[in-house]
Image 1 (cartoon, protein in one colour):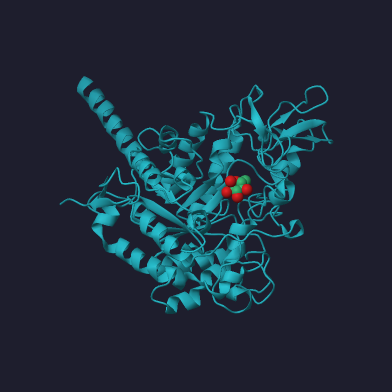
Image 2 (cartoon, helix red, strand yellow):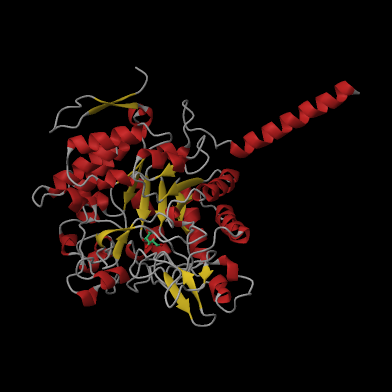
Length: 506
Ligand code: GLC
């Protein structure tokens, strides 16, 4: 009897153990080292408004993306991250989601999404969606209900507070300018928005919010997506006592007093939410990429989580803060991320920052420098995330006049802050009108450089940036040292030359 009981205990222990290891077990390794697909993959960020316009309304769409899958395959891309294509009033161009489980008609339909996913799968290209976890649109049904009364079902899905005296509950400012609180006349309380007022923050302390958001990811995994890029994860939680942030000297480009975001950014609770999202991801062998603006490697390590139970790919933005072609600065940053507790993720450009082409270009040798940067970050140990147009040397082209600015932050901050239109201009497919992006006038003008930097012409030129990327990505795909090898710097004191070995076994 006693023996029987103990074997039951042993058996249940074994079952529990094997169940939890199944839940945590990553998918099939792609090599003898046990690497997962996302460790060998090349990711490519697509800003759908600007990639390819299939219906000629001036805005890109999902069918447009589908029409370019062969181009992407040929380039050497394994996964595309599509920035938000869900229904949205487009105040922040999709980062204000009004329905997480649909496609904005501007981009197509769910059927178009399924067709895109099917066509991508045929080519072994995975789809990563952008999950805006911190906030919804003020037009989301949850918020529409939330603002109706102080006791309604979704009231506590957002952050509502009474004001202090005649003003907002505290001194927190929005990263897009002004107070982070907006008084809502219907209930005479303020709601909190880290970004635009049209992007109210979700209350992640409410388990109902957490569950609803986890379910959104399940819904898309079941539809065939391979993971998510998690938007603005630093900002998921706020101090429940709403302590004022410490003020810093000076003003921001938007004219607000600078402050240390001590009480509304990077709170430890963020990691509970990420562990929860990761558990769901593991049910589907999904990958989580994070928009993680860390200030050092210790912070980056927190995002990998203990035993790597949070994000598989927190982006190393410290790499993008190396502002000049300084071997010493890059060497330092590469060594730092190489020593991190998880797999490195390199990015040089995206839809929020000046393109690498301009960050490092000297105005004379920009194309050579663009190749140099590709040669650097595509040969490091880690996963690269490319940004559309980087492979042809697209240039950041900010608007020249305030009246042409589309990104609201550029209108608020003009002329100091011109917004992010410059890095979001339409993809340059050929030298025809509108760069082959659309037959109609595009939502942002096509830069004049489309005449010299475009896919069609660069494909024909063996020395083009595009052909450099294609060759390099081909090499990367088959070269064990580039895929799996270690990184060792070999000239640590040379101030002009950055060189390193990638060593695989012997
Ligand atoms: C992220 C996005 C950015 C957006 C913001 C608010 O930083 O990358 O484009 O404006 O979140 O969602």
